[in-house]
Length: 316
Image 1 (cartoon, one colour):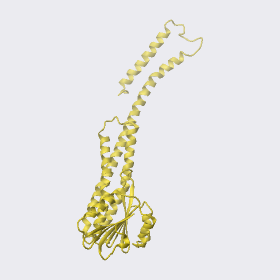
Image 2: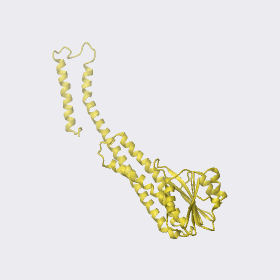
Image 3: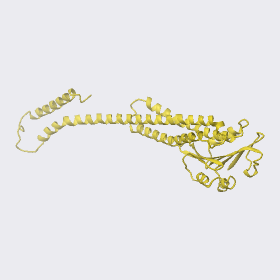
């Protein structure tokens, strides 16, 4: 589907006029959005706009890293929106030319719809209104990064304020799942941050200086997001080490208890083994009270070892 938003030189706004019917002489600027385009519609990138073949190839071969390419009469951008459910990046390709903006994406995107609605009601634009539309698209993308980052931050805060009883495998598994989510976000946010830095320092986009403060604001948001992601990753590392340390300490306590029990029963097992041998001629076999004497020795030996281990601090 291709939809168009056209702003005339009289500041009138029209929507969904076919590309072939657009009179460039009467139009101040226009925005063409390719959403889930068919093969025939995709061919218009070449047949109508005459974009560079490499840029068209990047549009049709997902998923590219966020980048900016300059061609003779058009600037090409690869942007990443965020799927809030899976936290996977969704590519949006953008072309900025003299008097027009083109967006291309293979799936419907909420951020594009929001930007479309906002641009449709914006006040009469300046001659470079298509740059304002481009800013709106990128700004909406970045705005949708925040809820995902805030949700993970709240989850980590809940982990951090919970008691130390959460030392089981499920808690550690949740920490690793959170780290995986942060890695997905980082792979989206950091390249977008670098792209915005290149945009605001570019001298090749005509009219950009008028909107530089807006794009700088997006870059500031991405800086904040990248710092939050890195801070949360550090927190998950600390939590991972904390849970693993508690688990190791718990294991050491269990092993120490088992070692004490085994050590106490070793001499008792030795004595029982000796008197369990089936020989006819053994000392003390005919003692009337031999059984009780051996039980007493074994009990006294076990109690004595227990008290000695306690004095040595094995039970602390």
